[in-house]
Length: 216
Image (cartoon, rainbow, N blue to C red):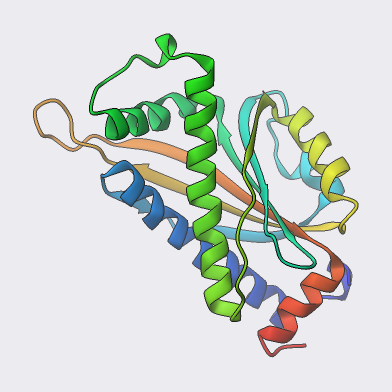
């Protein structure tokens, strides 16, 4: 099954999965950071794996990518994308929540940053997968995430190589998140996080997903 064979009902159902998953991921992030997180209406689209570089228009920008996959047959492969210049805020908030102290991002050891990003990816992607499990009546866990920080074009080239072996279609869910921690005087601050979650799966897994939704 490829993107050209999907009709409007198929696309609407798949987009709804993306929207529900993004909402659950935002809730999980709020719990993780201990502060409110507001999410704009997510934008979910099906995109060819090999056209991702043209889907994103800032291939030279630096990004952080977190990769993971589900452990079921015909696995779903996940990637979380966050702009590098937005990583500092979310990592600093997580470290403050976990250790009860403020640390300057620039002074954090690289392994601490990588660990925090892996944990953020694990929570967001795991929550996304759990919402898909609930919706489709599945039970599957998520692998240990891996982290990469590079130019977006280089990351997407790796994605095409890694995920292209499973199929040529990816569900991309883009969300603008507003993370609102308390300031030093108790006032609510607002930190914007532009995040994307990408899901790629084998054609047979996509067909199974649509069958579970009762539209194939």
